[in-house]
Length: 95
Image (tube, rainbow, N blue to C red):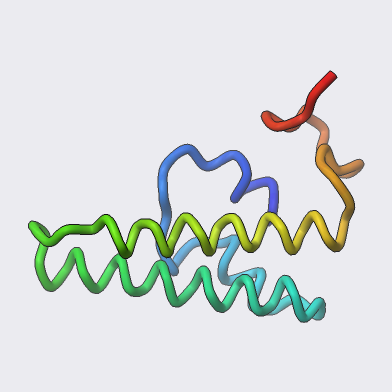
């Protein structure tokens, strides 16, 4: 789930697999970060449905923050990236 968040170049909402899987985690940090991502994604989706022309800046900022919190929680659980179970190099890894 963390790899999916890390690799996303576009924002995604509450219906995404990473948020749904994170809220089912037994790790409290991952679970809470998943809840925040789910809430932020839902808020963006609701805003887009209610008013497609609305300023999405604040809602998008909350979504990006929630995505980062999930990555941070995963770093706390698995250690710094790249994670050993990830077959490809992390885009944030340094040589």
